[in-house]
Amino acid sequence: MNATKRGMAGIAMLLVWMVLLAGCGGANAAQSDASANLAASAYASVSASGSEDAGASASAEAPVYRIVSTTVAVTQMLDALGVDLVGIPTSAKTLPERYANVTKVGNPMSPDMELVKSLRPTDVLSVTTLQYDLEPTFKQIGLNASFLNLTSLSSMQKEIRGLGTKFGREAEAEELANSYNDTLAKLQGEAAGKGKPSVLILLGVPGSYLVATEHSYIGDLVRLLGGVNIVQGEKVEYLASNTEYLQQANPDVILRAAHGMPAEVVKMFDEEFKKNDIWKHFKAVQNGRVYDLEEELFGTTGNIAANEALEALYTRLYP
Image (cartoon, rainbow, N blue to C red; front, side, top):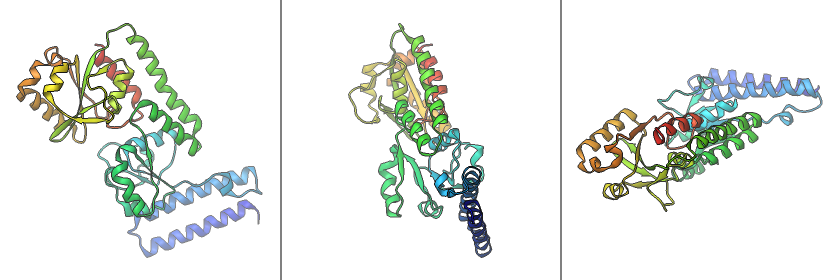
């Protein structure tokens, strides 16, 4: 029996096993979805092997990855690279159509660990900003998750290239990563010779807000475009707000980013700026240079919309 026939026989046995699973427990949709993805991947591997080298096994031609992405940003990246998944986050945001029938594993900050494990993943992907909270729990259930660093544009580009190398999408990854360099070079050229605006970045969540440093993703974009963050010398991404100190810095521009529930957070910001008398003394407020950033472009971590984010940010820094 040649390699192709052996591979096809293996797939047939796998399909029989799936039918038996369905008959015994049709309610377990997560396992059924995962099994279907495994069969499809195996079939693709066997087909490629049989057409090029009948003497080689399918597994030697292409490894079968079972990837669970637990954040929206990572899911969007993998879609841009053309990578299939067996698990995606549960989110109110619109996720790529490619994953319409993929199992949802829960909120990025608290995924359903048992559901993730039931998908038998080869790779579980999250982000470094959630590593402290999630890594111990993943280890408790025997899963070694990978946490991608998306806190700056350059680190995101590195992670995109790393995903491309691992999952056989090097060309797609290189094209995506390089597109950010092109946009950045164009905007930096336009900003050359212009005064560098001082900038205060506020990150709002329902009920409170923090100050973003240049080590945050939005802070990194501001720095790359020539803006000067009024918070210097810090090693963390976010700090508690001290309005008296912030007023002394008196920034040219105030950027307000909303996270979680954007409409509610923008309303909170509006009330804070109206009721707290100190804000009227800020130069940015007096000059009408307070801007609310779109959550789709300016998240707490980088995302594939970085080109659009750079363009939108440039117009705020250099009106």
